[in-house]
Image (cartoon, rainbow over the protein chains, first blue to last red):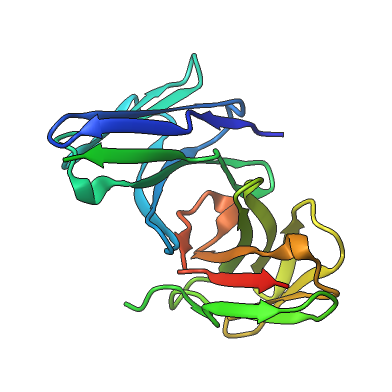
Length: 110
Length: 114
């Protein structure tokens, strides 16, 4: 089945850019997603990219997709303390609506 | 437009008991998926319902079951609770989960089994 891998921790200074990386194994995925989870909350859809795109920009968020290497990244420009959260990469796979990575905990240092 | 709602938000049960969790999807959405989130295993797919039919199920024992009603609301049930069932249970709604439609999540129900 699908395997989605993410690094577990990232620490950045306020105002810097954050880059969260994800690799996946199922190349047939049509959309690839990024979700954000704040403490004690559910999952908030951040953004997504269609598999025939290389890049998608949405305000401070930039998603890059390298289909050849099955690599997805999320860049957050001008990172703020309010961006501190866990970020999940998620990919549909076969009959499973979403397969998630373990999540990357982003800590923003003021 | 109201988002996905889940009730209750918190539950405390003891081993051996059973529990029922409820999820109301976004109006118009017909697909409801359930996920279990634990620190050790992360987010794992439980099952997905569409138009009152379970279409897919993850790798969970038969103690985990669910159903969907004609108004698309869904419930999941866990019988004979075990300590390892302590988790955050999240439901997500979409137009059609198997059509790769975007899934929107509720706030979750945190279940603690003592």
